[in-house]
Length: 117
Image (cartoon, rainbow, N blue to C red):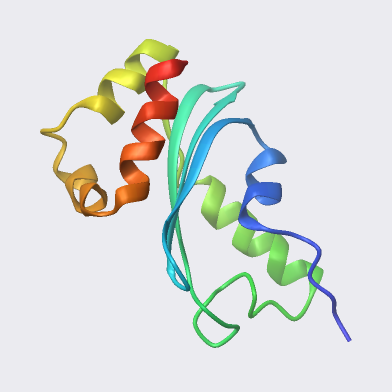
């Protein structure tokens, strides 16, 4: 029997330092991360589900599957050269791909964390 020891945060921490993160949604939703790594500063949004039937990480039955999920997730980081560039992107209300998250109250909390960096 395989026991999952990882969370989305621990997977991200294998590649980068988490500067800010917030869960958007409740039993299912997205986790948004602002990270710092060798490539610069990055924004990552990872969707999660409420159970092993609808959450990719919880559905893993082996460490190999966890490693595959981790690789896929980490490839999704949008990298910026500087922290200021990352902040400008996240704080820009005109970025279409980020507008979806604004409906969630936790997005405002994430924005506040980013502003404080």
